[in-house]
Amino acid sequence: MKLVKILTIVALAVLLSVLLWVRTGPTPAAPVAPAASERPAAATDDPAAPTEIAPAETDDPNENAEPEYFTVSMVGDCTLSASKDKRDWGIGFQRTVGDDYAYPFANTVQFLNDDYLTIANLECSLSDNKYSSIEQFSFLGKAAYANILTEGSVEFVTLANNHTLDFGQNAYDDTAAALDAVGVAYAGEDECYLYEADGGLKIGLYCLYNGLTGNAFSLLSASAQEKLVAESKQMIDRAVQELAEQGAEYTIACLHMGTEGNYETTDVQVELCRYAIDAGFGSVYCTHAHRLQPAELYGDGIIFYGLGNWIFGGHTNPGNGKDPASYDTGIGKITLCRRGHRVTLDSYDFIPCSISSALDPENGVPGVNSHNNYQPTPYAEGGAAWQRAMSIISGTYEGANYTVGNYWDILSAMGG
Image 1 (cartoon, rainbow, N blue to C red):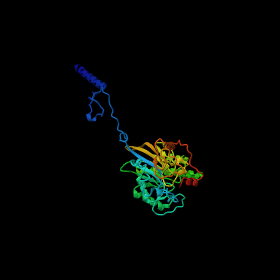
Image 2 (image 1 turned 90 degrees about the vertical axis):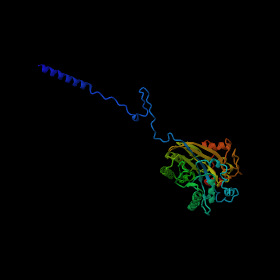
Image 3 (image 1 turned 60 degrees about the vertical axis):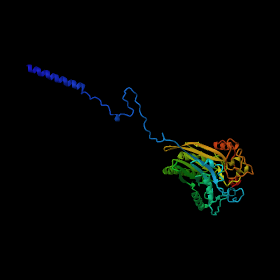
Image 4 (image 1 turned 45 degrees about the vertical axis):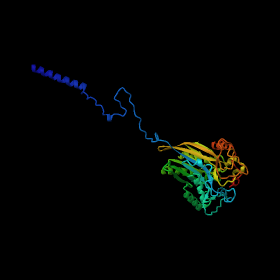
């Protein structure tokens, strides 16, 4: 009997121990502090101290990159010859310039020497061969006149314009050879060029004429106009893609359009220039009107709708002395900022000039006996001529477009 009682007590003790173990569970092991190398970078040994989280690394390499700046300058139409029936005139381009290749840019090269790239529209052929043309107004300068561009610090010219083929393909090839000989880069109709100097910014340039000038465009039917605009947009789209594939960091579209003698833009001109920005171009440089036209900040870029004439041998006295603004021109400048792989438009500027140094730089009002001496010269800042040119750029100019009655009369009155 005594043995039974002892076994019962032992069994109850074991049962009580089991019940207590089930209720409380096993004693957890003491926590182990992580090694210093395993701790978060901002961890602290003081549990009361606030936890500081280090900034996360960014995938944008531009965030802390040092900025680099590149200036691109743009000037208007360069026709380095008088028209074929005025080559021997005493005040014509050839007689005035002679072999002094530095003469045309003598008063403006200081604004172009230190930039990264200068762009111009070369609206003539350059060759020492004798060519004839059926065009009423055609311009053939000697091959050595390509040196005028290098003396003026021009690195690139567009050949996409309505005078490029006035003397046919052979003269075009001679022009290209003349430019190659002096190291001036170029692109022709619907062509791209990737410019890079000394390992600097890769600027993609695209050149397009495609018969879009106001005078030619107005001769088309409505359906033909729509087709031409649609085709031009497709060409612009292809150019954006091509330049991207070539590695361009910033792009500029060089478009040849507008109406000659007009200070106002055409609807198609605005549509296509803005389309180029929307399609991906950084800026647009437009030529053809032989008149200064407005500039516009659009999207993330800028559009120079028309920089007028620059060194223009086709004009002996633009406007026959009746249109003071016909002498107005200038240098468009954009400054680009590169941070890492990102390039943006930082700022832009415009330097108002006269196409001739023969005019009073203060008032710049030509008369019937005035003449173009093919030497662009800055206007005096704040003067009447300076203010007039700036009003054209800002789109506030109220002067009349230069029209005589028909295209033939306009060109004749313009002197070439």
